[in-house]
Length: 58
Image 1 (tube, rainbow, N blue to C red):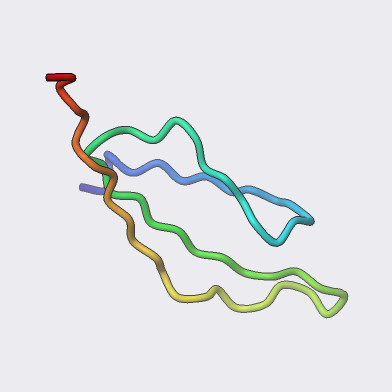
Image 2: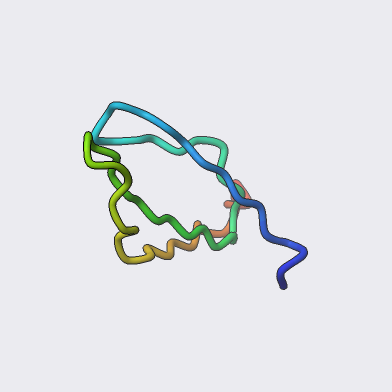
């Protein structure tokens, strides 16, 4: 559902990133593109990840 989507952009000079505070049983989609002296590149393929269900602690 489009209304349930949240978009976020992260700008960094690093070649890696850590994503924290993800919600359980939630689908996250990531796309990456580079920025060089020539400008922005094209986006790479979408990576879709679903987080695990929250454990019940039993």
